[in-house]
Every structure is written in C-alpha cells, then in structure tokens.
Length: 155
Image (cartoon, rainbow, N blue to C red):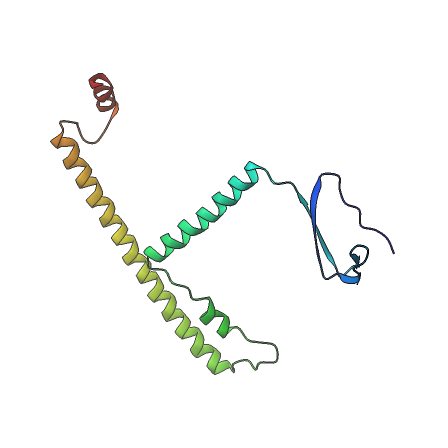
C-alpha cells in the first residue's frame, strides 16, 4: 500500500470511492485506481469573484432566455432518444417522423422570424424615444461628435 502524494500548496483533499479501513487512532482509507482524488488550494478573492461572475451569468442568461420566450425542452427531447435495447422505427415510420421534424423546423424558423421582427420593432421604438428625448432637450439626433462636444461645453 502506498500513500497519496499531496502537493505542498494543497489546503484540502476530497476523495471519492475510497474504502474506510480504520477510524482509530486516525482515519485510514484505501485509495485505488477506482478512487478519485481532488486537491484543493486555498481560495482567494479572485476565485470568489470568478464564482460570483459565473453564477450571475448563468442567472442572467436563464432569466433572459425565459423573457425571450424560450422554455425547457430537455425532458421531452431525452424521452425521444432510444434507450439501449429499444427497437428502432421501421423505414416508413422513420420517414413520417422526418417529415414531422421538417414541419417542426419550419415552425421554429417562422417563430424565429417573428422574434426577430419583434426585436427590430423594439429597437425602432427605442430609437424614436431617444430621438424625441434628444430633440426636446435641444440635442441633435443622431448623436455625433458635435453633439458630444456641445454636451462637454455645457458642463
């Protein structure tokens, strides 16, 4: 039996699929090829910042996808994947499913076009609102270098 080599900068160790041999006077495990050993360094502020950024990005992305009308479909997709030992469709059934899939793709493309149109309409509305706001305050639209200089001179 050999000992695992722990790097000097390691602060903590996680061991999965190890066998406990003894508890007294200290814990003794059998760590073999089937075991997974993870070495953890001491965390720092950069690590914490990266975790916060990752989690924030996932949360914002999920919210954005939901607001854009997307929905979770993984369960329905996974249900259609053949399990081991499952019989496959005959040629006729396969062709029918491919035709149905083609219809779904066309419907998704049409939905994407509608979503793109809604986005374009929203951008046009925002531009109109910005233009009205700028002209009401005497700022030329569209903004250009002279408008930026005009704002700086007013400050």
